[in-house]
Length: 179
Image (tube, rainbow, N blue to C red; front, side, top):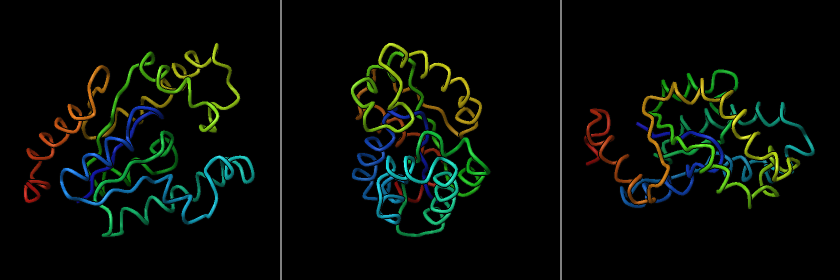
């Protein structure tokens, strides 16, 4: 069984995934890192040079690869991954999905210094960023809220979130053999 962490960019999927994997002695992979390795190109460059449609196609393909691969136990996916094609259904069928839910102010504070490294918000000015996050989060919320578990991350430390996920997994019959 695999764990897939999903949520909006900046909610902490990769950070939480790495910490959780370390504590549980499991293997972690960030889908974006996996794509960059396989494509030998940054996500930013893939978006710029080949476009979002190309990116979403390969993203879906690599997601399936990771879910079928026994190398990784915990996977974090991009903020848009569950919102395209059949990705969310595939995630929910093949893993335990956890939505790391962050509020608009939390996401704004985390993302305002990362605009240059995030293709979807690169061209949005700081003055419009919070409004963009709110609209985008509203659009994607339908998908995020279909995860098997939602965990709010606002005002919590990495350790607190990791502990909450560990407790959730320990109560999940598919994960109990790991504890």
